[in-house]
Image (cartoon, rainbow, N blue to C red; front, top):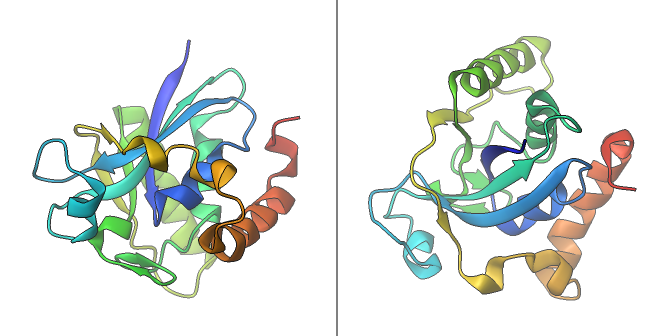
Length: 177
């Protein structure tokens, strides 16, 4: 039986591309969550005034990949110490956030965040928000599977591709065959 995880780690194009690499991930949908208005558009979310974060909703097979492994991929694939930004993408819509779907996910996210902070993995404290899942709104069609459909676009070449290369080295045992 499949389960759901929701993560925000900057631009959803980057996060989607990373999670699509993982064996056990059945589907990834880019979208918006955590804001105050219903059915937000990309243009509205980009203003930073709706309260939504760009997120991905992951449908995964827990028999193939555990939630803890998804969390590890999440924290490895971005800088969780940057408040409301990732690289040049700035605003609350790019915040680092785990939207948990049950108490087990909440507990695991909080535990791993605490362990990572104690480990000194980053020189600054992790600012990742851990919040209950709310209404998820899928992004417009042109945002779905963006990297794979637009590999030659400059953002894909200069931002997403290097993240993917680094991710593949660290998670090579967990990648799709």
